[in-house]
Length: 54
Image 1: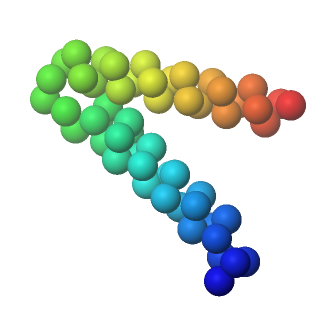
Image 2 (image 1 turned 90 degrees about the vertical axis):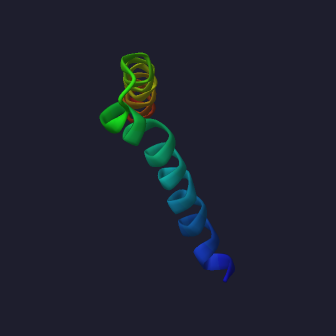
């Protein structure tokens, strides 16, 4: 079970980001919510790119 813990944690983080940021950015009827979710998504992707470059 301990070997699977990092995979489980990564999956939970991915699902939380997907449900909390990606879905509202795409499916929300409220323009303000879409705009805010897209902004957060852009910040997350920018941070990921900077982290990968190292």
